[in-house]
Length: 468
Image (cartoon, rainbow, N blue to C red; front, side):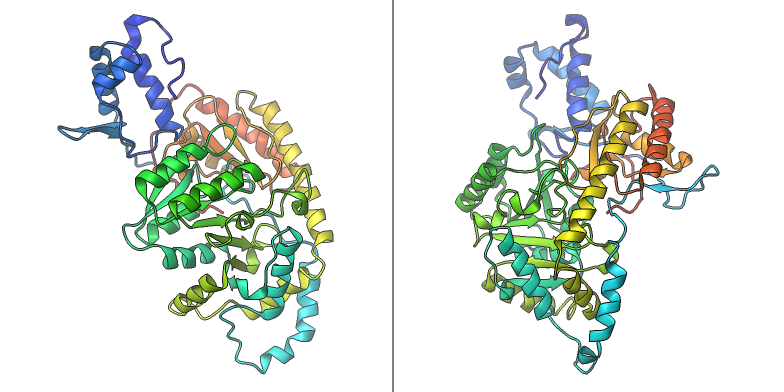
């Protein structure tokens, strides 16, 4: 992981080593809590003198990036800061572009679906309106969509929820308890990390690689940490937009089966395959481990976040257990919104095809703008999802998020996507805005990047913007 860390010769060896470790921490590749090798072991492996190792660690301890205790060794820590950004920070005479929420506006056919539902609503008004499993018609259409993707599914394997976040909360309530460990990708979706911490579970991060998932690292974490479940996003991962291929899914399923660890798989953006057809993509994870996989889905990214309709696909036995625990939280999702989504899913392809084409065009506009105005930033063109994961030219993600408010852009700093912070060299930039807004936002980001160039990292901070 350190690579070619030594840059300036032996006179500055300790500073170079400290800088290399610091970058791994800020990039999130060394999460907080990671135990470091003993000083003697580091000196032998690198190889350098023990004195150089001690000097480098002393520098990192002074910065708050390493903590040590006699007899317990050293581990990665994170400094704390007080930079806060309120959601409604005053702007400098310009409209706010929300780059913190990766959520597109409603599909054009949504209003027509509401009109259609209004005509059929009277028959439901005579009923009690409580459907713990969800409306049978919607469950059938979601099951049919899984079948079209190559995963035979019956309606009794579907539970309708109030969005994917609610679905994850139900899964966590079922599978974990206070103090249990939950394996997560590093980086990961901030709201999922918050949900894990909200049930007093402990996220165990496994760093993503430049090409996707570190499957040997996941296997090692499952053996060593023995988490009660794993939360993964294998279709257009949020925020990196990586997609795990069929071979990798089979390997991940085998790893989970050997460790007997349930996989909670978030498919929130599986329909947003911008360079292909979702029906031709890799088989769903449940195809490889039906008994171990709990799949989360949602209409928030594909149709509209305001519907607040999601779902869980699992075995009938897990569905029964979910319903038994659900009644302590709620008694079912809103009927009208379920009817609307059922109407939209009667013939889903035309509207989804239009959605994908629009997002692909907006993605290309944002990338063109970033290349023009932020040429030092690096990124790969995502083949799906809703955002670009940008590597900055310096660890200034939090500082950029702070300064961007004054330029009319609301950003979630990279640290929000780490289980314990980090990722100061990264930003997630959604392309859900209209093309003209994206072009102007890229121009503003160029001004922000120029204004913070050479200022150095702001340190960990609580930038309080809502993320989606």
